[in-house]
Length: 174
Image (cartoon, rainbow, N blue to C red; front, side):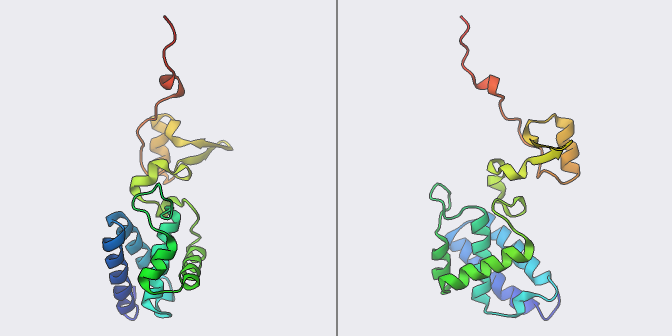
């Protein structure tokens, strides 16, 4: 990051950190900081234009959108519009900045690169790999294949082996 970007980065990072500590958790703070750093390193950095509160809102909204923060079944849970209010940003402004960030870095829903570590096991897109033209869930592959997929960066880590369907069936033989 260049020296001219540093003051904007530090202000936005402080806003994001404060918000995450107050309303979310450390996992969100970590991913939001990573996204802030990525924006600061981009040439030219978009953080130099616009208000720090708008960027902070867009960053938190983006990470929240990827992780379905507005789903009531999630913990923590928060409506994306509540993020706008907390930052004092208009709803269309917060949403617009989030869309801009998502387009800039090609961030998609359930994007493994921006998924909370605690939710990675429940993110099917993190585990789908292509082998010989077939899309396969890597969690069900042999350990050796998983290790190769990890080495190539295709999966986030070696998962615990999920129980097979046969293991879940009640024993009916008597």
